[in-house]
Amino acid sequence: MKALIALEDGTVFEGKGYGVHGEKEGEIVFNTSMTGYQEIMTDPSYKGQIVTMTYPLIGNYGVNDDDVESDGPKVEGFIVKELSKIASNFRATDDLLNYFERHNILAIEDVDTRALTKHLRARGVMKGIISTVDLDRESLVGKAKASRGIIGVDLVKEVTCKSSYVFGGGDGGLRCVVVDFGVKMNILRMLKKAGCHVTVVPADERAENILAMKPHGILLSNGPGDPEGLPYAIEEIRKLIGIIPIFGICLGQQLLGLAFGGKTYKLKFGHRGANQPNKETSTGKVYITSENHGFAVDVGSITKEPVRVTHINLNDNTVEGIEHTVYPVFSVQFHPEASPGPHDAYGLFEKFKGMMEDYRKGQDA
Image (cartoon, rainbow, N blue to C red; front, top):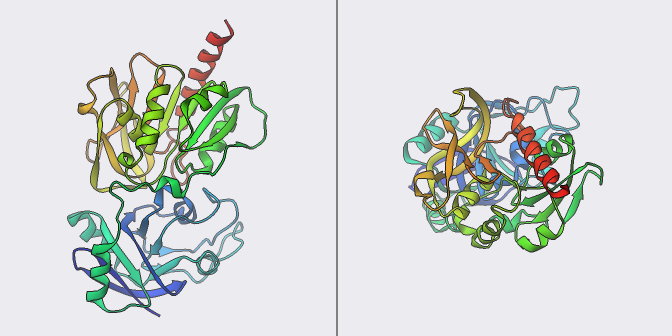
């Protein structure tokens, strides 16, 4: 069936629709990863977004029940050049077309994804509509302009857990509380691997309730949307700084920057892919990282707390890591759990583990 992609600037692309027959709105973004489409679709950070894959052939290794980052797909829609109708992999339990249909995902193929990506790189990511029901170009562009977008919108409330839970059983000597702004499953797996008892709490959990659990560390997770749309989270994080070790990932870093009294800003087209180069400022070592974010911390705006930059993105020199020079608090903008992506930054979980161990020793002394 015919489908259209309409951007708020009036540009329209054509394609063929798969999955559900309907219409979806969202911010149109692109991801440069060659693999990992199932992890991408189920990453809660993509809530509110329609993802364009730049790699031309998507779906050739099918889908399975293990390569998921949440309880189901969170993308608003999916755009590809060519959708593989054949799944060939020993781990595959289904093909991508059936996956779209089963999870009510509106997907569009036969799109000039190179032209679409170049347009977004030149103009910046923007609001858009994908549709198989309304094929009137002028109508769709009008809908795209009128759609809600993500600026100032709290998308976290749509993906955070409804109540606290313990992940992966009660074993593990270090108690870690994860504030769920849209946490990826592999972050929780990595914490368990580091020897943690992991308790996940909703995004709006009060600081005093978190501290009452007597954790040895707190992880602020990734998540979708504009960090400035979460004033309640910023206020609670501010109460935790200086009391307990904190590790922030992606949105977690942005919220930490705001809690430090700084500002965030929207990137032109964001960083979404599995091959982002990041330099560690203290050693000069370059990590290849997996990333998915559209906002960044303006570290120059942090004037009330002693914070240093630990990582810089070598593509555009944006801040990718910060650390408090007095308190055991640090964060990164990329994804050290690397799912999908390289494993260069796994060591950051060991760094966090060391901070928690030091804190536990201090508590026991």
